[in-house]
Amino acid sequence: MKAPSWNLDDLYKGIEDPKIQHDLESSKKDSLDFSKKYETNVAALSAEALAKAIQEYEALGETLGRLGSFAGLVFAQDMTDKKGVSFYQRTQESLIAIGSNFLFFTLEINEIPDTILEKYFKESKALARYKPWIDNIRTFKKHQLPKDMEKILHEKSGPSCSNWVRLYDETFSELRFPFDKKKLTSTDIMNLLMDPHPKTRAKAAKVFAKTLKENISLFTLVYNTIIKDKEIDDRWRGYKAPIESRNKANLVDDKVVESLITSVRDYYPKLSHRYYKLKAKWMGKKKMPYWDRNAPLLEDDNRIISWEEAQKIVLKSYRDFSPELADIGQVFFEKNWIDAALRPGKDSGAFSHPTVPSVHPYILQNYHGKSWDVMTLAHELGHGIHQILAAKQGDLMASTPLTLAETASIFGEMLTFHSLLSQTTDPKRRKVILAGKVGDMLNTVVRQISFCEFEKAVHERRKQGELTPEEIGEIWVETQKRSLGPSITLTKDYANNWSYISHFFHVPFYVYAYAFGNCLVNSLYAVYRENPEGFQEKYIALLSAGGTLSYKEILAPFGLDAEDPNFWNKGLKMISDLIDELEALP
Image (cartoon, rainbow, N blue to C red):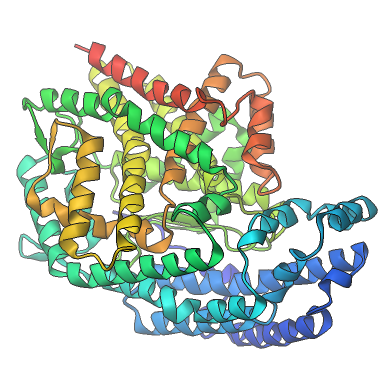
């Protein structure tokens, strides 16, 4: 499959670029100068002086962000390249050391009384601009520890946790799955789980499960360590539940997240249970083995879609909605900001890395030429466009919480889906497109909430002591059975499949953000279809706001409120309506 590889020169001209060492040394000096100038003195600064200090802090952070982004992208493009891995680790250790020099800054901002800050915001426009960022860091005020403890935790973050995540990533990227006298990468074997031939899917699933089992002791040790590390941190900071710190980082109330989880769980019978029963019927079965869950329909021609065609499909979908968004997306293809080529050692997932506002995002995916790869491209391009639009907010306020970060990506998928559907007159093809979208939505909503339920249970059980692979596997199977329903059969070899979900290791409780974003986008898209006049302008304003607005403020112009108990049901009903349409087809 012909697909592009990215060009990282806009960050640095390779790992030997002398500018890397220059930036590291200058950042170290600047961080020490910043510390001498401001440490123990932040609370005494005037409004204008505090604004100036934040601007210096932001500039320093952007340089470090550039270094960290480049090292992370080098690592992602080949986790088996020893030079690249060594460069990544050295850079991470340097950034942690430099970061400890100005760690005091946000801690001391949080020591300024609210009354003083409110007075300062009125006195200084420059400081008022940073109010959203200051409000966000003050969310963690009651959970911050004494400065010396924060510094110790920061400096130990690499060896105490990050290196365990790195061990997981490197181990998983080096796994090879024996299949028909070939040794396949994880992305290749997982692609076979969606092969049109049942025997191929079954064989691929068994090979995948067998290889996971051979490595499950290591993955279990890594996972136990990461969870314990988080539990210690949460306990010292006074978090009441394992998910609470993620909710704080997402700037969303615990009750809103619990409402989302409960709503999706209550909808399991109307969504996944019903759809998989229907799909099993299409396949002439009462029950499907788990490896048939994402199988293509018999009506699907399973044709390979070239990279060039995928580009046209996605950009047309965006252009029909907004020429401005399509023009931004076009640049990603023209300037080689996308790495979609298949390579051994490459990160098996997909992402759009925002890097820093002074550069631009980079997109990674593994393009096999299937219809779901086109949707992945639409998804990641949505992230990239969002990151470009938000860059004007600066390094401290360009990024959004995870709950809003998934908005543009899932909206991009929705645009592509409806564009393809509108161009289809053949009933069989329409059925394939509808079923594909329902399957994607179930993976994004139901599956991710079941993942969150798994995490909640595992993190609670881990408080009682280290868990065995069997204990984790039992929780995994139990939560997946509940979500998938009675029409999916989970065999014994499925018990270790939790270990390939990288989000469990990288960012605990990240997963519910996908369901949050999907339901939010479903509601947004319903508003667009009901009243398209002026929607594009409001939507672009939403993306351009970056992290300067809360989800409440973001949704207000569209007449939506995520705290409304019926909000989630509106988004879930849209999925149910698509299943209704599929059930009505002959």
